[in-house]
Image (tube, rainbow, N blue to C red; front, side, top):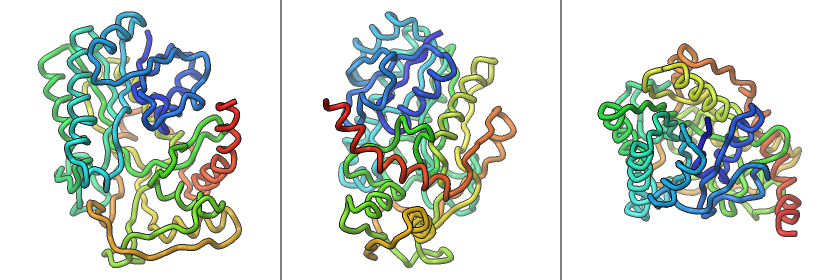
Length: 332
């Protein structure tokens, strides 16, 4: 059995690849390297350069490597960018997923794990938010992912095809072994931005809005360690292999931290202050998103290990310190 990981050279995808290789799985990566990096991957893993929308390339890859499962990460993920370029997000996230699904079905790939997002909930009226809550996304990014979830449901009804959609909350941290982490220049992930600012890689960082209906006025998010998230995918794959029916799960810890609380955690980790500017709200940002995680804990054999904001920040900061050397080694 061989697993295709799309977007496997990206932040979350590369953690997934290391997790699978550590478990002795056969893995193939498909990535167009628009935001991913080969140096994040084990050298032993076959790599295919290209897009999930290239049906001929994907079909050839599925046949050549005898793929029986797909873990699909490849996507555009920046909420404000999706507001500026909605058609680009629908093309890359929704249309390419449709193409990938069609090629998978035509080549008898019956197990599919989809990288979805809490952005499908929009401004959730109740928090922690359950999987059966209303899905009313407020950004094209969230809508593009919800469209893909709908396609997965319909495909599973029409074909011998089962899926797990994992709705991520805010993914953060880095591989505790230092092999991979968030490496994209200009990334918008809050913890990465704060770590870059703490290390002098940015002159300052911005807080977008302090007038939300939250305890300190800043957005509240459920931060999940990227290694725990990768293990949730492994648990989802094991569930499908046992014959589990198609399902959707929230991926978070069930508690939130505000933007100001994250900044304070980074200050504790680096032991000094750094410049923070207060700005206006960004379009598409809900006030609070925290996961109800009852379903995933009851259904999957998933046991998160890093449920602590200070640990998440410490791993992210350690990677940020290591990253220049990783880039230089790859270039050399």
